[in-house]
Image 1 (tube, rainbow over the protein chains, first blue to last red):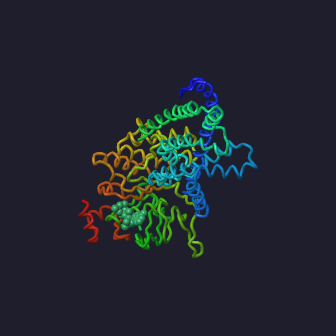
Image 2: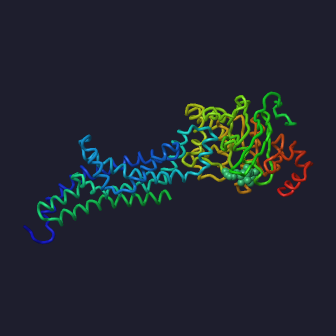
Image 3: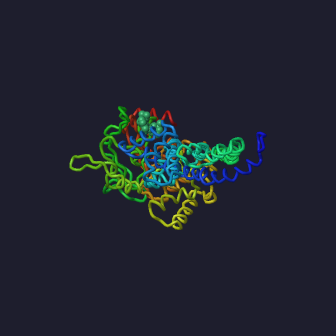
Length: 217
Length: 267
Ligand SMILES: Nc1ncnc2c1ncn2[C@@H]1O[C@H](COP(=O)(O)OP(=O)(O)OP(=O)(O)O)[C@@H](O)[C@H]1O
Ligand SMILES: [Mg+2]
């Protein structure tokens, strides 16, 4: 075996496994988790705005509770409770990620909704637009505009937190890297490559977000 | 009661178009309107004048249901708007019923309040399509007619942000007219405009006043405009009517010192 600090043989051997972990788990979890957060976040934000107190207050408690506890604990707990009923740990992981970030996205939407001037609601009332149409055609399009950059940033940060899925034994990329390291006693290549893959994926995304931010400013 | 008849000869016989009955409006413990009573006849144009804080905007916003009545009743076309009297009990009118009445009422705001996420044309077609149930084609052809009327045909696909204040306000007028309102509420629609843009907006409004029999409640500091379009002027102070009368009477020969002081200050 090559005893230098870097071995191209190991790199070549581990890369396909890492990519498999990346595409099958890391990326899937990020994309679906983001989707859940984007949709549920909007629903939570709207509920907190329009629903009567006996609904919106408990929703606020749940949101605060989720924000105040670590993602890792939520993953382990949800897995413990749900695994007898749900076969796929990946599905549990995705929902936990999605719901965790829902609480952050809801805050972003709330700020976006609050940033829509009162005059817009009043113009809608003056035109007798029904409430649902006011949300759909007037408020949400204007609120979303200011939330796009934050949405992108949360997607990246969720992406970077997918290694936590290891605590429920999902073979995402970093776990693959560690396993490979454990089996071969070569950690350098696998961990370095895993880091590089994260970088290659998130850097262009963040550049894109920054551009979007400038365009919307 | 109105002394004047509407331009097309409609008289105030029958139910008043707008009726304020013992209207009370409080914000916290600030009583803005206290037992206010007045009526507007069908087709009548009434201008409200009075010092800042006298409650003019509040009156218009109550009619548009942008503010909730604290006490009393407002009737529009004979129908209760926000509350109704059911055998001495004051009962809130449902949102759905309110909306049926408010579809007859249009409002133009000081700051236009166009929807920035829509084009000029979409701003105007939004309510006809989604409230009146017009087809898209019908709504567009209607909007085009209105844009023509307000002199904005060449801007139909622009975004509001690309327009001057005067142009935005003319679009906002077209948007309100697209709902075929029977009542139009105008709250200082030129006071956010650069002085050189005021004329184009007032010209459009004068045309509409001349060509339609829409009832109007107008708040303005443009006294010449008020003279030109109103049938009646009501002078307010601290939420009560100080005096009312024809524009000629109020502007040339006011009966109250408070009116004289006010007119002296604004003219
Ligand atoms: N949303 C509100 N909350 C609290 N107080 C309000 C609110 N809207 C109006 N008021 C108060 O009601 C009173 C009447 O205000 P209003 O805007 O109707 O006056 P106005 O005659 O239109 O004055 P202006 O000529 O300055 O526009 C004022 O004392 C104002 O501070
Ligand atoms: Mg006012």
